[in-house]
Figure 1: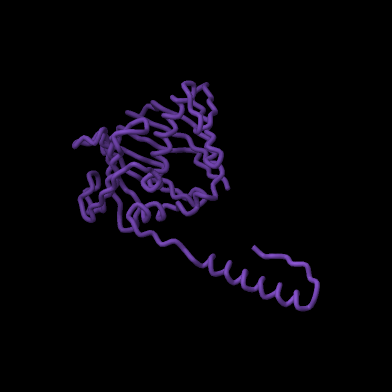
Figure 2: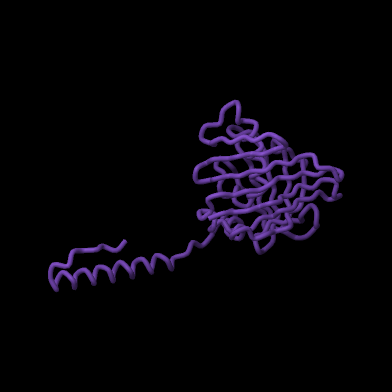
Length: 230
Protein backbone atom coordinates (compact mmCIF):
# COMPACT_ATOMS: atom_id res chain seq x y z
CA UNK A 1 0.00 0.00 0.00
CA UNK A 2 1.39 3.42 -0.91
CA UNK A 3 2.21 5.75 1.92
CA UNK A 4 1.15 9.35 1.42
CA UNK A 5 3.59 11.48 3.42
CA UNK A 6 3.20 15.20 4.02
CA UNK A 7 5.64 17.03 1.77
CA UNK A 8 7.49 19.27 4.21
CA UNK A 9 10.72 19.69 2.27
CA UNK A 10 12.47 18.69 -0.92
CA UNK A 11 14.26 15.96 1.06
CA UNK A 12 10.93 14.63 2.26
CA UNK A 13 9.66 14.61 -1.32
CA UNK A 14 12.68 12.57 -2.41
CA UNK A 15 12.23 10.04 0.39
CA UNK A 16 8.53 9.73 -0.39
CA UNK A 17 9.17 9.08 -4.07
CA UNK A 18 11.74 6.43 -3.28
CA UNK A 19 9.41 4.64 -0.88
CA UNK A 20 6.56 4.71 -3.35
CA UNK A 21 8.83 3.33 -6.07
CA UNK A 22 9.91 0.42 -3.86
CA UNK A 23 6.32 -0.34 -2.89
CA UNK A 24 5.18 -0.31 -6.51
CA UNK A 25 7.99 -2.67 -7.46
CA UNK A 26 7.15 -5.05 -4.59
CA UNK A 27 3.47 -5.03 -5.56
CA UNK A 28 4.35 -5.78 -9.17
CA UNK A 29 6.61 -8.65 -8.14
CA UNK A 30 3.85 -10.13 -5.95
CA UNK A 31 1.39 -9.95 -8.84
CA UNK A 32 3.75 -11.95 -11.03
CA UNK A 33 3.92 -14.82 -8.54
CA UNK A 34 1.45 -17.53 -9.58
CA UNK A 35 0.47 -20.66 -7.71
CA UNK A 36 1.64 -23.91 -9.27
CA UNK A 37 -0.53 -26.94 -8.39
CA UNK A 38 1.49 -29.94 -7.28
CA UNK A 39 -0.96 -32.55 -5.92
CA UNK A 40 -3.51 -34.31 -8.09
CA UNK A 41 -6.33 -32.69 -6.11
CA UNK A 42 -4.87 -29.24 -6.78
CA UNK A 43 -4.34 -29.97 -10.47
CA UNK A 44 -7.96 -31.09 -10.90
CA UNK A 45 -9.33 -28.10 -9.01
CA UNK A 46 -7.20 -25.56 -10.87
CA UNK A 47 -7.92 -27.15 -14.25
CA UNK A 48 -11.56 -26.42 -13.47
CA UNK A 49 -11.13 -22.78 -12.48
CA UNK A 50 -10.96 -22.82 -8.70
CA UNK A 51 -8.60 -19.82 -8.84
CA UNK A 52 -11.68 -17.75 -9.76
CA UNK A 53 -13.76 -18.96 -6.81
CA UNK A 54 -12.72 -16.18 -4.44
CA UNK A 55 -14.30 -13.65 -6.81
CA UNK A 56 -17.73 -15.28 -6.62
CA UNK A 57 -20.26 -13.58 -4.34
CA UNK A 58 -23.33 -15.56 -5.44
CA UNK A 59 -23.91 -18.87 -7.21
CA UNK A 60 -27.34 -19.84 -8.55
CA UNK A 61 -28.23 -23.23 -10.02
CA UNK A 62 -31.09 -25.66 -10.50
CA UNK A 63 -30.52 -29.35 -9.74
CA UNK A 64 -32.59 -31.78 -11.86
CA UNK A 65 -32.89 -35.57 -11.85
CA UNK A 66 -34.67 -37.63 -14.52
CA UNK A 67 -35.34 -41.36 -14.27
CA UNK A 68 -36.85 -43.20 -17.19
CA UNK A 69 -37.58 -39.89 -18.89
CA UNK A 70 -39.53 -38.52 -15.91
CA UNK A 71 -38.32 -35.66 -13.69
CA UNK A 72 -38.16 -36.99 -10.14
CA UNK A 73 -36.29 -34.13 -8.46
CA UNK A 74 -35.89 -30.42 -9.08
CA UNK A 75 -34.44 -27.89 -6.64
CA UNK A 76 -33.20 -24.35 -7.25
CA UNK A 77 -30.48 -22.82 -5.12
CA UNK A 78 -29.05 -19.37 -4.52
CA UNK A 79 -25.86 -19.45 -2.48
CA UNK A 80 -23.88 -16.51 -1.16
CA UNK A 81 -20.67 -18.25 -0.03
CA UNK A 82 -19.08 -15.22 1.64
CA UNK A 83 -22.16 -14.79 3.87
CA UNK A 84 -22.73 -18.57 4.08
CA UNK A 85 -26.37 -17.88 3.18
CA UNK A 86 -28.44 -20.37 1.19
CA UNK A 87 -31.92 -20.14 -0.33
CA UNK A 88 -33.67 -23.26 -1.64
CA UNK A 89 -36.77 -23.22 -3.83
CA UNK A 90 -38.45 -26.56 -4.46
CA UNK A 91 -42.04 -26.89 -5.72
CA UNK A 92 -43.93 -24.33 -3.64
CA UNK A 93 -41.49 -24.33 -0.74
CA UNK A 94 -38.77 -21.70 -0.16
CA UNK A 95 -36.25 -21.90 2.67
CA UNK A 96 -33.51 -19.39 3.48
CA UNK A 97 -30.94 -20.16 6.16
CA UNK A 98 -27.34 -19.61 7.19
CA UNK A 99 -25.07 -22.65 7.18
CA UNK A 100 -23.40 -21.44 10.38
CA UNK A 101 -26.64 -22.05 12.29
CA UNK A 102 -28.43 -25.05 10.77
CA UNK A 103 -31.30 -26.22 12.96
CA UNK A 104 -34.19 -28.70 12.75
CA UNK A 105 -36.14 -26.42 10.40
CA UNK A 106 -33.30 -26.08 7.88
CA UNK A 107 -31.49 -29.43 8.20
CA UNK A 108 -33.43 -31.16 5.40
CA UNK A 109 -32.70 -28.25 3.07
CA UNK A 110 -29.03 -28.28 4.07
CA UNK A 111 -28.74 -32.00 3.34
CA UNK A 112 -30.11 -31.35 -0.14
CA UNK A 113 -27.76 -28.41 -0.61
CA UNK A 114 -24.67 -30.42 0.36
CA UNK A 115 -25.65 -33.17 -2.08
CA UNK A 116 -26.48 -30.87 -4.98
CA UNK A 117 -23.46 -28.61 -4.44
CA UNK A 118 -21.20 -31.65 -4.37
CA UNK A 119 -22.38 -32.75 -7.81
CA UNK A 120 -21.95 -29.22 -9.15
CA UNK A 121 -18.52 -28.49 -7.66
CA UNK A 122 -17.00 -31.95 -7.31
CA UNK A 123 -13.58 -30.89 -8.72
CA UNK A 124 -13.36 -28.28 -5.95
CA UNK A 125 -14.72 -30.52 -3.20
CA UNK A 126 -11.75 -32.84 -3.75
CA UNK A 127 -9.53 -29.99 -2.58
CA UNK A 128 -11.89 -28.41 -0.04
CA UNK A 129 -13.02 -31.38 2.01
CA UNK A 130 -11.05 -32.21 5.11
CA UNK A 131 -10.99 -35.52 6.94
CA UNK A 132 -10.59 -37.47 3.69
CA UNK A 133 -8.08 -39.98 2.37
CA UNK A 134 -6.88 -39.52 -1.20
CA UNK A 135 -5.29 -42.25 -3.31
CA UNK A 136 -4.22 -41.96 -6.95
CA UNK A 137 -3.75 -44.51 -9.72
CA UNK A 138 -1.99 -43.20 -12.81
CA UNK A 139 -3.31 -45.64 -15.39
CA UNK A 140 -6.59 -47.54 -15.07
CA UNK A 141 -9.54 -48.39 -17.31
CA UNK A 142 -12.56 -46.11 -16.83
CA UNK A 143 -15.83 -48.00 -16.19
CA UNK A 144 -18.02 -46.38 -18.87
CA UNK A 145 -15.82 -45.32 -21.79
CA UNK A 146 -13.33 -48.15 -21.17
CA UNK A 147 -10.52 -45.73 -21.88
CA UNK A 148 -7.19 -45.49 -20.15
CA UNK A 149 -7.55 -42.82 -17.45
CA UNK A 150 -6.16 -41.44 -14.24
CA UNK A 151 -8.11 -42.28 -11.11
CA UNK A 152 -8.35 -40.41 -7.82
CA UNK A 153 -10.25 -42.00 -4.93
CA UNK A 154 -11.66 -39.82 -2.18
CA UNK A 155 -12.61 -41.67 1.02
CA UNK A 156 -14.45 -39.80 3.76
CA UNK A 157 -13.88 -40.49 7.43
CA UNK A 158 -16.27 -42.48 9.56
CA UNK A 159 -17.34 -39.41 11.51
CA UNK A 160 -18.72 -36.02 10.54
CA UNK A 161 -20.97 -34.87 7.73
CA UNK A 162 -24.32 -36.28 6.68
CA UNK A 163 -22.96 -39.43 5.00
CA UNK A 164 -19.66 -40.45 6.62
CA UNK A 165 -17.57 -43.27 5.23
CA UNK A 166 -18.55 -42.85 1.57
CA UNK A 167 -16.05 -43.16 -1.27
CA UNK A 168 -15.81 -41.53 -4.70
CA UNK A 169 -13.65 -42.64 -7.62
CA UNK A 170 -12.90 -39.83 -10.08
CA UNK A 171 -11.65 -40.70 -13.57
CA UNK A 172 -9.90 -37.96 -15.55
CA UNK A 173 -7.60 -37.35 -18.49
CA UNK A 174 -4.22 -35.71 -18.89
CA UNK A 175 -6.02 -32.34 -18.94
CA UNK A 176 -7.32 -33.06 -15.39
CA UNK A 177 -10.91 -32.77 -16.59
CA UNK A 178 -13.15 -35.35 -14.86
CA UNK A 179 -14.97 -37.58 -17.36
CA UNK A 180 -16.64 -40.18 -15.11
CA UNK A 181 -17.07 -40.99 -11.47
CA UNK A 182 -18.16 -43.84 -9.23
CA UNK A 183 -19.99 -43.38 -5.95
CA UNK A 184 -19.53 -46.19 -3.42
CA UNK A 185 -21.76 -45.88 -0.38
CA UNK A 186 -19.96 -46.67 2.89
CA UNK A 187 -16.84 -47.54 0.85
CA UNK A 188 -18.44 -50.69 -0.53
CA UNK A 189 -16.40 -52.59 -3.09
CA UNK A 190 -19.26 -52.51 -5.61
CA UNK A 191 -20.44 -49.23 -7.17
CA UNK A 192 -23.63 -47.64 -5.88
CA UNK A 193 -23.76 -45.31 -8.91
CA UNK A 194 -21.67 -44.58 -12.00
CA UNK A 195 -22.22 -41.55 -14.22
CA UNK A 196 -20.50 -39.42 -16.80
CA UNK A 197 -19.17 -35.90 -16.30
CA UNK A 198 -20.03 -33.96 -19.45
CA UNK A 199 -21.63 -30.80 -20.80
CA UNK A 200 -18.86 -28.59 -19.43
CA UNK A 201 -19.63 -24.88 -19.42
CA UNK A 202 -17.57 -21.85 -18.45
CA UNK A 203 -19.62 -20.06 -15.79
CA UNK A 204 -17.78 -16.81 -15.04
CA UNK A 205 -14.46 -18.64 -14.95
CA UNK A 206 -15.76 -21.77 -13.21
CA UNK A 207 -15.63 -24.90 -15.35
CA UNK A 208 -18.84 -26.78 -14.55
CA UNK A 209 -19.93 -30.23 -15.76
CA UNK A 210 -23.66 -29.65 -16.21
CA UNK A 211 -24.67 -33.17 -17.28
CA UNK A 212 -24.29 -36.63 -15.73
CA UNK A 213 -25.73 -39.81 -17.25
CA UNK A 214 -25.80 -43.50 -16.46
CA UNK A 215 -24.48 -45.97 -19.02
CA UNK A 216 -27.94 -46.99 -20.27
CA UNK A 217 -29.31 -43.44 -20.15
CA UNK A 218 -32.11 -44.31 -17.73
CA UNK A 219 -30.68 -41.90 -15.14
CA UNK A 220 -29.74 -38.31 -15.85
CA UNK A 221 -28.71 -35.64 -13.36
CA UNK A 222 -28.21 -32.19 -14.83
CA UNK A 223 -27.98 -28.52 -13.97
CA UNK A 224 -29.81 -25.60 -15.50
CA UNK A 225 -29.83 -21.85 -14.88
CA UNK A 226 -26.26 -21.91 -13.56
CA UNK A 227 -25.03 -18.36 -12.90
CA UNK A 228 -22.06 -17.05 -10.93
CA UNK A 229 -21.77 -13.41 -9.89
CA UNK A 230 -18.73 -11.39 -8.85
